Image (cartoon, rainbow, N blue to C red; front, side, top):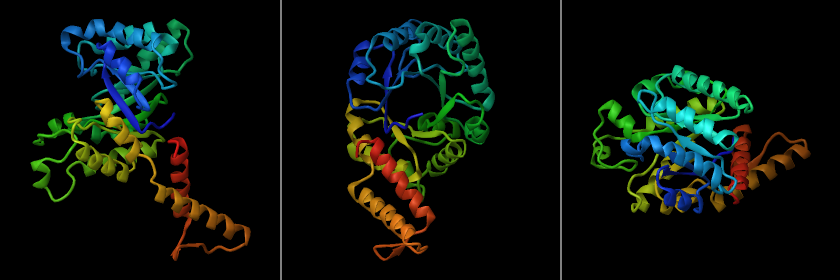
Length: 303
């Protein structure tokens, strides 16, 4: 399981957009069969996924696609046709609108059968789950521990707002309705997703900003998500990728602080001292863990 700062969504039915996405700086890409594909194209788009997974160069990225929701007529054939067709070239399935742990159990059972039939390694194909409804958030702890295949939880802000009846005019950025509330309207659900993910050893990925021209809005949304502990964020356009990669990488100042903390801690340990101070501030065990997390993140992001 590798954390990706940027996850670029692309319609599975548009080969040129898929190729452009795979040529971008996005650290992960997923082929969408759900919202990005019109109903009349959903059936044939399954084979578009199979061909893209098997034929295109993913640049070392995991191969991932999103099925339609479980309560649609397309869901089960999405799983069967794509997984059977792509075989061991497919790494993971993203499941939208997960409401309870039974939803993921149903997908896992389908994958069990396909892996047996195709003689694939049992449990090799992973799952990622979107939390997009009030019911899903209520059941999030059970969802997070529902199957060993699960590796990430994603936040879907648009459908979540609709589930709650929240007025919203700008997906992923603050609008006039946010100014009516003295705080961040999605703060609770976002933190809840991160807590459930971390408790179960999963990654946490924030949802998209719909207006790819709004760079400052995207920057703000990225800063909020990273401040809450998310590992990365969706992009809906390649132009968003550099900003997302930047904000979800430690700054030079953060890396320098982390290096100081670790050096001071190791020096104190070698000298037999239990007290550690950096720039006049006492450093405790939590500071050491945060510093090492920062250095690990800097290393994985090339910083």
